[in-house]
Amino acid sequence: MTDSLDIYLNTVNQGDPERIGVAMHRLMAELYPICRSITGEGVRETLRILQRLIPLEIHEVPTGTPVFDWTVPKEWNIRDAYILDGQGKRVVDFKKSNLHVISYSQPVHKKMSLDELRKHLVSLPEHPDWIPYRTSYYNENWGFCLSHRQLEAMHDDEYEVCIDSSLTDGHLTYGEYLIQGQSQDEILISCHICHPSLCNDNLSGIALATQLAAQLASQGKPRYSYRFLFIPGTIGSITWLALNEAQAGRIRHGLVVTCVGDGGQFTYKQSRRGDAEIDRAAIHVLKHSGAAWTMQEFFPYGYDERQYCSPGFDLPVGCLMRSPHGSFPEYHTSADNLDFVRPEFLEETLHRYLDVVEILEHNRTYINLNPKCEPQLGKRGLYQAIGGDSEAAKKQLAMLWVLNLSDGKHSLLDIAAKAACQFGIIRSVAEVLVQHGLLREFVEV
Ligand code: ZN
Image (cartoon, rainbow, N blue to C red; front, side, top):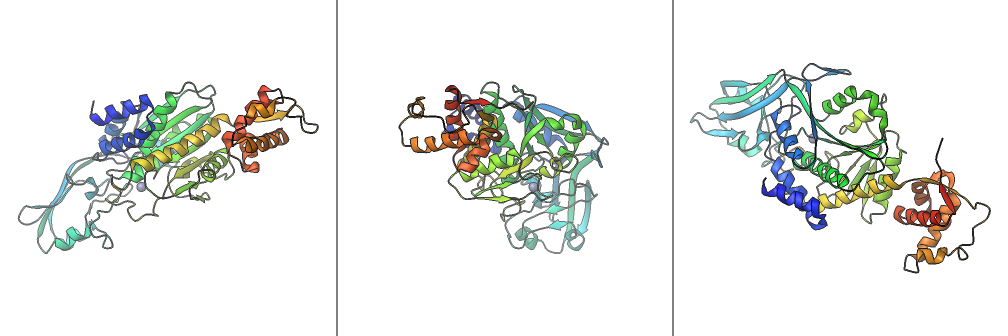
């Protein structure tokens, strides 16, 4: 076992909050060099590393499998790629960065002039030291990405280009882990696993989802079942939905995990429904976090929420992230590296996810058993029950809100929103009121 995994597992086992961010970052560092794409060995290797941390099931779906309007593509693998100048020097080398090759490039091995080669080169003049990330999944092509400085250093010469790749019938690979809860109703946590050496988009999502899974699995049987998907973007969620259409309706709440390790403020992208419980839970957490945040209404672009929220499914799946894709210059470039994501940001995001889970696990609806005028709280010992601490006034008011709105139509989360009070306080006073015979859970039949 490697050092980083040792630290990771110890951290998970000891629940040391200070080191969880470091452990997630170390997991990212271990996955960073692997060349992933939407199919291929890089995805398998990544999932095998995650299997040492959580008992992921690895699924293989054959090339050519029809999945709704799409088809599982050929499997892409790459061993090496380079551009040699006239003196035989490697001026671009895949072994130095896997971003140098456009993902899904067809194999090529030939000599050509710089003018011919230019049609196959991509650089970023506005960030001359960064290598861009490009893909060519669904049209046959080949090409190299390089820093603008590398491009400027190239001159008229005969270049030898080689991409030692293969595009063959194979499989689409994805990972799935179900934590069985008390209910068959599910919470979906989905992240994409198809990017090569890029950190915020997408290794941060992989590390956070893995940590969240490990933590939830160690805490006894939850109320909901939790389904974790580690899938290639777009084609992976389409494939999963096509193969699991019958059970997709069990998903009661869901989050797509991406861009969770940068220092930007939190962003929540609503589900297509906009007012689903997951939307209200995530907004509640951000509102009470004490930090700046923004909300985006659903739009049919972005990550796999596009597929989960397609009209034929319309699942309540939002996206809880920090800086959204495309909003930071490092996005889809070599600058989205291990320095751009920090342990403390990963850890802070993990806490937001755990706060959302806490709400979903405990959000219930109650009936006030003494609805005609307020019950006399003093007589029933309720002032003592909530204690005389600095929170006492807040808790008393919370109690009045819970009593007033517990009519079978308002959940604790609805009440917390109306009362502008933290969910945890509303939940704790509801528990006291249940113990004192003033509330009972409302169960819809
Ligand atoms: Zn991306």
